[in-house]
Length: 168
Image (cartoon, rainbow, N blue to C red; front, side, top):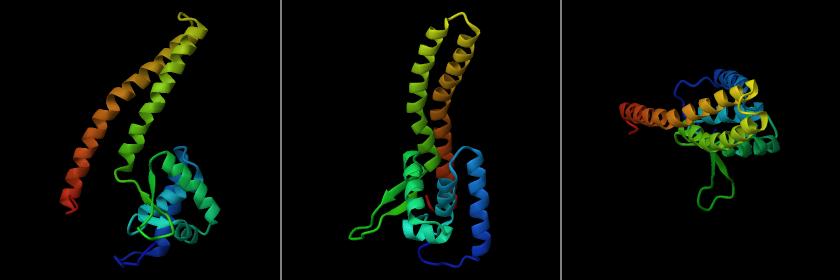
């Protein structure tokens, strides 16, 4: 989106890839426009772009970009930054975005656990509904225990990958 560097890049193939990846992300529950913006930022040479650059690349309105990046910043996949002296914001793929997005879920899991406990009390501890709620609560407990372990493993793997690419 910023400066053009030719690494054998096929812009038409890149655009098709962005749309395919966006569809895959939509299938996971990410809204369509944020999925397209995220995919476009992933393929940007510097991993960032302005609202105008993203709108031009995706052939959408700047307003559509604005709403989409708001969502992406809330889920920790994108950050907003401004160069010193610049008037335009740039949106950047968050460094280690997946770890940050997953770790952010811990707050939600804690809230859900409290709500599930209330639900178990409301339906009666011995009811089939309470059993289903308890299974959901246990799953969230497992997730909260395992996510930090997985993130640590990922960060070690990411460091090794970056070192092998000379980006350590």
